[in-house]
Image 1 (tube, rainbow, N blue to C red):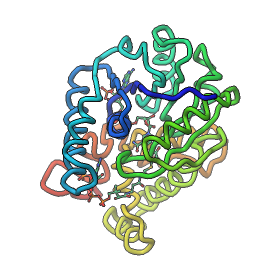
Image 2: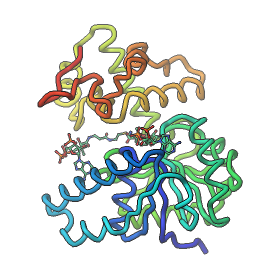
Image 3: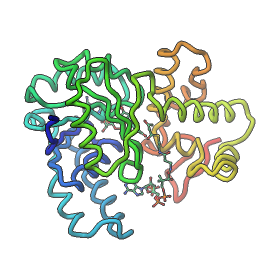
Image 4: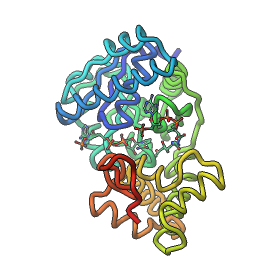
Length: 293
Ligand SMILES: CC(=O)CC(=O)SCCNC(=O)CCNC(=O)[C@H](O)C(C)(C)COP(=O)(O)OP(=O)(O)OC[C@H]1O[C@@H](n2cnc3c(N)ncnc32)[C@H](O)[C@@H]1OP(=O)(O)O
Ligand SMILES: NC(=O)C1=CN([C@@H]2O[C@H](COP(=O)(O)OP(=O)(O)OC[C@H]3O[C@@H](n4cnc5c(N)ncnc54)[C@H](OP(=O)(O)O)[C@@H]3O)[C@@H](O)[C@H]2O)C=CC1
């Protein structure tokens, strides 16, 4: 029988890491959140507190639940605090070499029966699993952004993932209140295999001058009823993450239809990564977002 997951660790406290810590703590799990810097962790705790307050204001949760969730989260830099976790979910940047290095260090401190999950948007679960000492206890647990609001989690088995790991992960995802879509381990899985080429095409539409930022986003918001325009959504995801996903699709499927738009490459090279760096297809430094093209 699959073991119940009662405590989780989260590596990386960016928008996905702090969102996963938020929903797991609200579900009553003990959470240890780690990152490379103490400042990052402080700002992640402030974000979680703000997002929980927003849920209280919207009457989604009570103030008592807000306070109880905060008490469930411990944060500490480095990986030592993860030693007793049942499940550790890696949510660091979408760079394979960074994730492999993290897993190398993590395996040395983790208890032998702990499960490792990766929140990767696109990278092969089988390949990441092979860089650990426990490929059978490794799985893709792919939350969507923003985690507290989005209903779906993709579960992706690597070639070696065993049934107990899959079932324990399934029970964990259900416990945090999310629905599951099971995906085979192919580049970018299901959601991003479909979503990211659409976003990349929107960037080509901008690059080729078919429309400006405002026109492209209005077209898809009002003409296709997407909740956010594709360029607004790209800024929300992070342009570095969008580029990494397109690169994984392009290399992994060897098809030119996935070629990342040169304009996306240029924005990332400029450090204009979207909302997280205050500038992307919109400039967020003023009172309201202003298109940069
Ligand atoms: C890249 C990958 O690997 C996979 C992915 O995740 S792809 C991305 C998937 N996500 C999407 O497609 C999201 C599309 N957008 C939407 O569905 C909606 O716009 C939304 C759900 C994000 C917001 O819905 P809304 O009803 O307009 O929310 P609203 O209450 O007005 O809040 C909007 C704001 O709060 C955020 N937000 C609201 N409640 C939140 C909470 N509890 N926790 C975190 N963020 C929250 C929103 O992101 C946005 O941020 P700012 O206020 O800082 O600008
Ligand atoms: N953004 C999205 O919409 C989604 C992203 N994902 C995936 O989730 C993961 C995280 O994305 P996201 O939260 O957006 O990224 P962010 O850039 O917001 O956060 C990544 C965090 O990881 C930290 N970090 C970097 N290197 C390490 C390390 N070696 N050890 C510990 N922490 C580290 C970063 O610190 P610093 O900034 O100081 O480098 C940062 O705080 C990626 O794999 C991404 O593909 C999945 C679903 C949706």
